[in-house]
Length: 133
Length: 118
Image 1 (cartoon, one colour):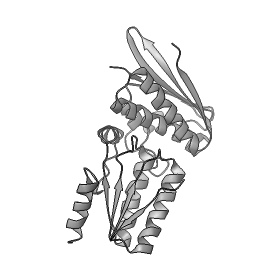
Image 2 (image 1 turned 60 degrees about the vertical axis):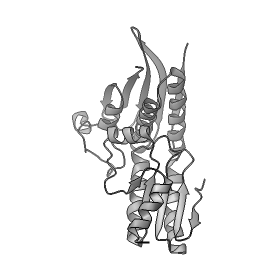
Image 3 (image 1 turned 90 degrees about the horizontal axis):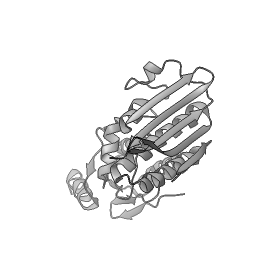
Image 4 (image 1 turned 45 degrees about the vertical axis):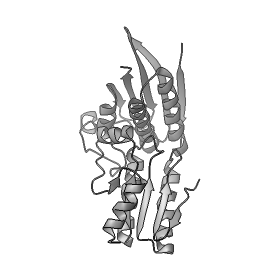
């Protein structure tokens, strides 16, 4: 079974598109309503970050496995300005947009695994996984 | 897309039944304030029973519209927040402080009646 969806994020509508396809895949994989909400919210935050800070990028949602575990993986990638100080953006309450997004610490709490890779002037790549329980 | 706003005596009732995009949410904010101005409504219930996701942006828009309406003299109650939505909001770190809420539409209207002393 190969479930994957890739949504290009260029405008506000694409944020809705990304989270809708995330919800569909989460449902298909058997996630309950609470985890479905967590996953769609995380996608919404990540897609909005792309739209706000990089202008454009893409969100890929796919099925992932590790041993006997099954999960949903979100990859949010852009070639925007990148993040100067990753440690700082991972602090609760840090914002550069005047509080528009709940920020990355919130997304990290919603998901089980979270990795961020960013280079200044090259872009940002965030991967987050939720495991099926 | 526009979200319909219904008038019932001195109250306005809104039930959000679409997946809110940013523009629709901001349009709703304006429409509601305009409607309060136009009708002189004293209380507003925004029912979120059909909303299955609230992200930080929508939370901000809802929190703002509550405060904006208060500035105009109308009280707003949010009702019907789903368990999954409540859990996600707290996970995200959004507490919706000072935003009046009630379990459902019925209790929301009761709350308004008590607050408005009617």
